[in-house]
Every structure is written in C-alpha cells, then in structure tokens.
Amino acid sequence: MSFSGRRFSTTKDPNSSELSSSIHRLFRSAHEGHRPHAGLDPSRGSTGVVWCTERANEYGFQDNPSDWCNLGQGAPEAGDDIEGSFERPKHIEVSIGAREYGPTAGIKPLRVAIANLYNTHHRRGKESQYSWKNVCVVPGGRSGLIRIAAVLNNAYLGFFIPDYTAYNEMLSLFRNFAAIPSPLSHDDGYHIHPDKIAEELSRGTSVILTSNPRNPTGQVVANPVLSQIQDICRDRASLIMDEFYGGYNYKSGCDGTTISAAENVQNVNEDDVLIIDGLTKRFRLPGWRVAWILGPEDFIKAIGSCGSYLDGGTNVPFQEAAIPMLEPDKVRKEMQALQTHFKRKRDYVLARLREIGFEIHHVPDSTFYVWLDLSSLPAEINDGLNFFQKCLEEHVIVVPGIFFDLNPAKRRDLFDSPCHHFVRLSYGPKMDDLVKGLDRIERIVK
View 1 (cartoon, one colour):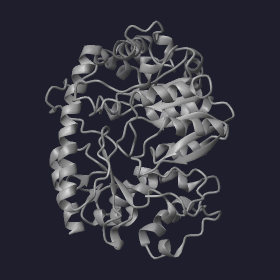
View 2 (cartoon, rainbow, N blue to C red):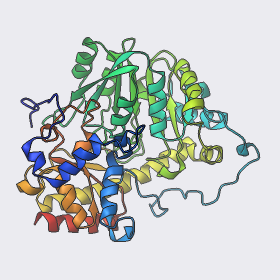
View 3 (cartoon, rainbow, N blue to C red):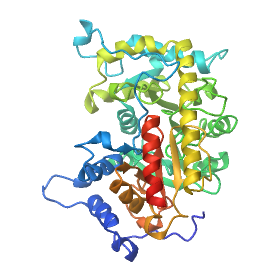
View 4 (tube, one colour):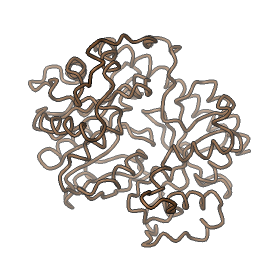
C-alpha cells in the first residue's frame, strides 16, 4: 500500500463516496459538531472508542452487554482465571494517611517500588539508576500524557500514523507545540526506522511521541533498532515512549521479559526519555487508574507540580495497594503468565481470521490487537466505518481504522486516510467472547 497520491484537502467538504454512506455522514457530523450551547465544542464529547460505544448503545449494547462481543475494547480481560497469574486484591485496607490529599507526584513508597522495578529489570550493572525522584505517579495514561504536554516548551512534536486515538485530542488541545504527522508504511510493517527519526529531527522536530509496543498495529520496536533511535535523539530531542503494552511481548518465547527504552538510557537525569506505563494493561487493572511516568528529575518535578491544576493526583489507597504488586520477581512471573495466555489467544484469532478469508500481512508480535486489512472484502464492507456498521448489526464491536489516523488539524478526507480500509480488532476479551465474535464476523463476510 502506498501513501503517494492521497489528497489532503484544505476544506472539510466530504467527497461523493462519503456522502453515499450513512455511517460516514454520521461520523463527519459528530466531529464537525454544532453549537447548541455557546461555550461548548461538541466534538470533544464523541471521540475514538467512546464514539464506537455510543453507536453500539443505539443497537442495545448498554441494555444487554452480555449479548455482545466487544472486540473493540482497549483493555485486557480482568479476571483471576489466567493460569500462573497472581490474584488481584478484592478488598483494600485504607490507612489513616490515605484519607488525606496525596502528593500530586504520588506517594514516595510507590515511587520507590517503581524505580526499583525498572532498575532490576532494565538497568542491572548500569552506573546510572532511577530513584524515586525519577518517578511521577499519575491517574491513568491519558492524565500522564496531558501532564507531559502541559510542560513541553514551544516545539515541533513529531508523531506517527497510525497510533493511539487519545493522542488526537491531546495534540489538538495544547498550543505550546505544533504537531507534525509522519505516516508509516503498511508495506514495511509500520516499522519506525532510525532513518525516519533522523529525518524528523533534520526538519526541526524536537519532541517525538510514539507508543511502543504500538497501538493499533501490534508491532514493537526492539533493540538494536530502539537503541539506535535513542542514540539519534540523545541531546537533540525529547523522546516520549508510551509503553503500556510492554508486557505483551511475544518475541522472546514468553519468558516474561518486557521491552522498554529504560534499557538504553545512559544517564537517567540527562537523557530526555519519558516513559509512560502503569497497572492498566500489563497488570490488567484498568479500573484502578494508577499509572506512572519515568524521566529526568527536572521533567518529573514539573510533571508532578502541574498535577495540582490538571487532575489533583492519583487515588492514595490504590497507590498503597499497588506497592506489593511491583516486586520484580513477582512481576516477571506475572509477565510470563500474561504472555503465554495472550499469545495463545492471538494465535487462535489469526487462524480464524485466515479461515474466514482475511489476509494477515503482518503478524502482531506484541499488544493484544490485530490491525485488520479489509481491502480484499466486497466494496460495501471494505472500509472501517461500513464494516463497523455491519458488525453492530451482529452485536460485535470493532474500532474503525480512521480513529488511528491522528489528524489534529482535521484537514484530511476520510476516504484518503491510510487507515480507511482497516479496523482494530482486540483479543483482549476472554476466549469465549473471541469465539463468538469471530463466528459473527464470519457471517458478515460469507
């Protein structure tokens, strides 16, 4: 698939293909918005997976979720039935101190535990070690991203297409940097090459933002390429690494190892590398809203401080409950169980998709997503939004690829998007839901 010849319109007028599709017209109208309230931008209220869930609710999802297969969810199954996984707390003791406001950078014991986890798993034998001062605890990944964005200087910020949908809102919210998109090639497996990074820096980019492992493509940048990218950025650009899927690593035999830029940092207080992770994905606790940022002390001090006016900080009782989960040997065993279980689900989903007739061009080596190419399907269902519409009729949810075309300026025709003929399909749910959902997708296709 080539990105040459795509139109980048300077207006928001839909083309004839969009006008002939009701779901495209609905998508377009939701994101242009109208003004029923003078102070409201209604497009802010209908974004990404939220928009997909709203459409599913119109078909009864909210009233009877057990009848649905949510293969669009951006979260892993959260039960206690994964073999080898430790049991999550069902009750939490609330200390007297936890009744008080907590520090906006997080409580010190949890920051110490996070620093120790990274030093043990990624910095053994290195002179420069993370301390608690290199850690800021935040109430979820989005809050972490917003805090980082709030402290950035005037800069060109480079990001890649496709990537995580929430970046779109974050990048359009702040005016202290200009967001510069850079599309990755489907033919090349959406890899981020060191030459690509060098090219971005040569045109003045001083901040790079990317998920790694990558949402939605399921590809990961590992060493030695990751190390080369960090070498190129060192002393030239700040590198923001969203590593929430780092535990879902299928490249090393499900041995429990995780992939992190922390491995290649030379000096924890001089390398401009900010790492975001948390309990959400690899500890399967999205409802706890406990995440963290690692980076140089100067960055962390500013990021912790801005929490006082952005989000107020993270729930203290859940911070206290998280501390024993982060013992390094315990985490390694947990990652082994996680990788074994989710790789088994990945292999099942890919086999079924091939049986149904989909072409799998790039096997995901991380995350719990398949970036599914629809271009070989009949014309009426070979784009993400129309396929999504058909799935709703079968009580299945997927996420149209258009949401991963990060387009803060909203100047691109939908049908010209490099993500137009894709959906993101999640194998985060339990196996029973995957079986049922793929049965229904097979009915759509055949």
